[in-house]
Amino acid sequence: MCAAHANVQPNIAPPPDLSRLCIHTVTTRPWSLDEAIAHYALAGVSGITVWRDALAGDEPRAAGQRIRAAGLAPVSLCRGGFFPARAAGDRAAAIDDNRRAIDVAAALGAPLLVLVPGADPGQPLDVSRGQIREGIEAVLPHALAAGVRLGVEPLHPMYAATRSAINTLRQANELCEALDSPWLGAVVDVYHLWWDPDLGREIARAGAAGRLWAFHISDWVTPTDILTDRALMGEGCIPIRQIRGWMERAGFDGYHEVEIFSTRRWTQEQRAYLREIVAAYLAHS
Ligand code: ZN
Image 1 (tube, protein in one colour):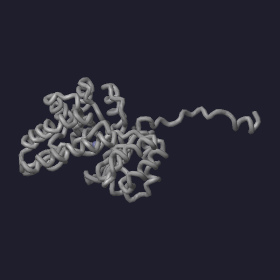
Image 2: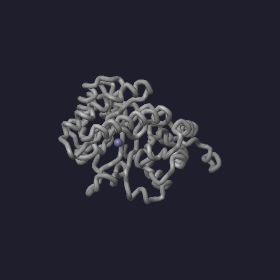
Image 3: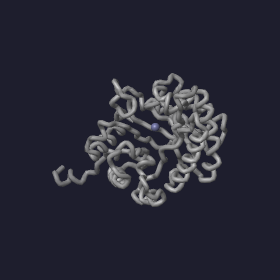
């Protein structure tokens, strides 16, 4: 075969499948929302989860239109929650803030608001858990009216003092079962839940109830500073593919959302970082 003929042979390698890849704006925090939209779209990313600080005074309806015009899906809004507080006035303010977040998600066109449940170190965990339940119960009618689902995200127990009194998927499942609303489900973040020996069983339980609504991925390195030291998929010890398999067997067919807080990565040139994210997603997720 002559060289000219060889040049027209079709490339038989299938294109990389990025149809389920979503990135959280916080992952590339140095970028504005519009920079994130443009670069994600250019890289072939399919979805974007918008953090409220990325909107920064932006009109959410217009932001949602720009997201869709770029060919991206607005996957969810992060984040609401933080319901517990010793003072009743603070709990009422949190409920108001969650209603506003639901309105922002609806205007953005995001079908899901992620709830970080919250905790107050000045009171017992079970009191905080009761207040989480009351807070969610108070905002569920607003979620229903707006057509926005609420996803409870359990956080790693290291966050139990200040960020979440809900630390396992079992707790999230029990909360969802107690409130029994089609607008309330669970968010599985591998960073927070990978260590739990019951994780596979609880993912199946959430899936059987139709409450498996989001899947966040990153990796856990050691040593770690816990808050802003998450790693790219494949750099740490989380069995992401095993957990993804549990999710898929439980019926989950949504996005794989890359959510990485990393002071080190935020200082990196973000376009090169985005290329690394896509490569790590394809190789390890
Ligand atoms: Zn998450």
